[in-house]
Length: 518
Image 1 (cartoon, one colour):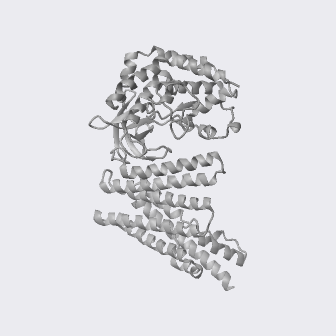
Image 2 (tube, one colour):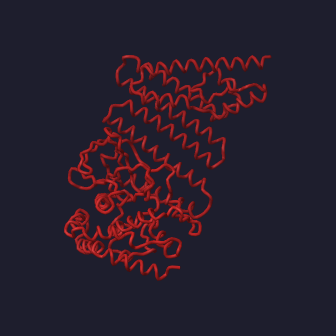
Image 3 (cartoon, helix red, strand yellow):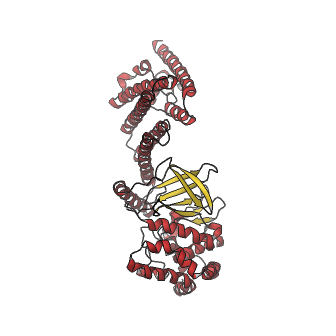
């Protein structure tokens, strides 16, 4: 009988606690400054979970064989001391740390509510908000520490770390949004949020690798992760400050002859080698990707931003249907410091050329290579040929919502323009970490697995040939200016040679492919 009474008492206390927290949430809703603050705080309160409470619940269920729905505590944001005390003897050190930090969070939450409802000075209110952030992060970390102690599964451990980072990011965002836009404290808070977003990106990547079966694709992902990790460490030391690389930054720019006012809405993780940020047109909601003009180690490199702009212009001239608006961004001294390109709407569950490219030759399907797709890839190849761009890997071909594909990221163009392997078309030349998708594509043709027709690129070749040489050369002037004096003339000559001899280059290439075709 006493055991049944204990269960009923626990049920009643949990109901009381739930009602108390509902009242707190209603008070918070009235006093919160913005909707973002409210949703963030409520999220953190309602999504707290305790692995040890689930174990206690199971013990009670086994003992009394009763419906334990009323004992489900994952939806309860906090637990009063008297409820938790019933299982205190069975708690581990890390579980007690969770309870301790939860008490501190409740106290900090009450203090913030008092400040928001009262008429205290701004300094004390700011201190209270900061203490609340600290309490949230301590509790989040304590819970993750406890959960990590209770599992040895590699994937699950990454999942715990991912949940931890997501909650910390949400807490930092809620805190940052309480601070005045443009203030130093807000900039610092958003910068710390970005640091945690970088950690989250790494954990998600490591989880993906852990779930992959052994093989070429997993080896490739592990190699990529290592390279990106080393690059990020170099960037953190060597990368120069860029005012556009800050959340809330405003960028005024002209794209396609139309002036735009864009706002930085946070870090973008695209898997590339340099920092990227989302910019949003608050009027239309259209988003753009800003990429810092530096190399993989963090040193300034305006060439990439310039070639992104030139690549966008050439795409618009030669393949307007699949062109992506892009411009280089300059500072007040006229130096290129970044590039901006429109973000396309990608098809949900669209075809993944990156995975396709890294599959074993014998397993790589040809079903996706319809006549329309082959025409698109050959068109992209023609544009990349005159740009001397060998960095179009599988992940740079994206499928749009209408089913067509686009080729993105031209900042690697011209970087190998004077290298021996670039003077003729080839299925083997690969100067970057990832092989160009075109090598895979043309090898499949040479091996007789797909059919191609030179006539497919005839339209693009004709468009290239009618471009005015003088105007074409002028288009590349910003890039030529960045070169050393002894490189300027040779590079200019090679740029024009590729443009003027594109037909001959294709004729020679296809004759060679056909001579070895099986």
